[in-house]
Image 1: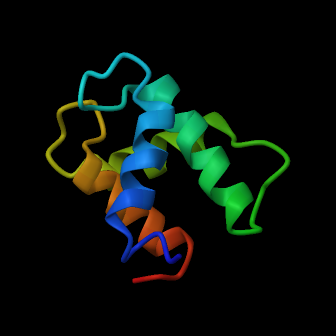
Image 2: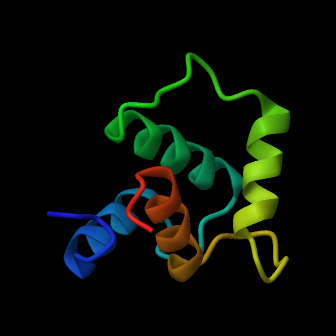
Length: 84
């Protein structure tokens, strides 16, 4: 199933990373998510340099609250996996 169109896939992906069930991903949770999504989409870098991560985080933290919401995550997954 396409991640972008399958709410259940998004929910289960989300549940894997929102370990504290806060409804938002903090930076460590987001970094794990980014690496997993890149890996799933066959684009795994050997490492995610801190500045690349910070840049990606800023790009997807659209409301600037320092965490990634489920909606923000969906946008990221669609863009990375080419589902947009």
